[in-house]
Length: 295
Image (cartoon, rainbow, N blue to C red; front, side, top):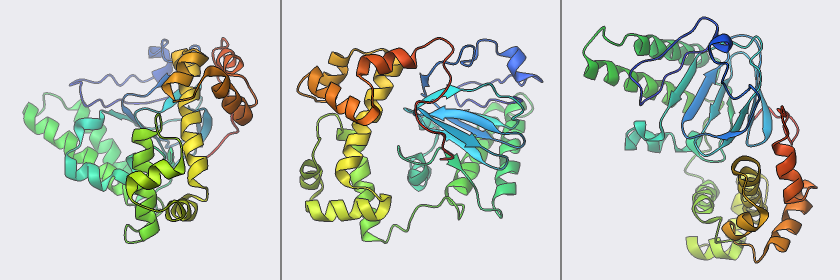
């Protein structure tokens, strides 16, 4: 895969003509899951890219963007014929006002695959390549100006993608959307210790009925299911990536004991925690444990 990397904390970048040949230690040799600490963004300009994000294989077609946010698990597939720019940046590189405008697309549950509106797509692509060109231009202009231009181009790219018509978040004027967003924020902060809808309703100052209706209207699923799915996702990450024991995961996620956690996990995955961990770490395993998805 012909990729170029931009990292907010590194002043230089290597742009090899044959990416795979120069990166024989890349995670696909063999493929292993890892937890992202940066934002990973790839625009596919030709070919098709397959990439596992939180145990689901995402398919990224030409004109689409893959965006892996920090905290998510990922696993690389062999790149095949996919080509496009690869942009890597730290979460704190964006100023606070820009980060607020990007809240919808940087949220934990935001789609991993973005399809910009046709009117915005060519502009986003041009901005991405301008960013990469500026990254390669280290030494051409004063360092402070070089970094300022990179930050400005990155902000322009992200804001265009975030507010493209096909990826824009629902209107913030809708009350149920606001309730749902507050619930998601609270869930991300408290899923380890708060496990009931009543807990979040009390925390946010809403009735259980209001919270449930808001989540169903915004996400098509109930608040209770969302709580369980978030705990399950974290369990999968810890068992498959970090190699935690079932006892450790149970304690971390607030289960009364490992047996209770085991029943919870098996009822939703069909596997015991130990069987799941073994399958995740099988040598050469690159396939997802869930069906392929385009989101």
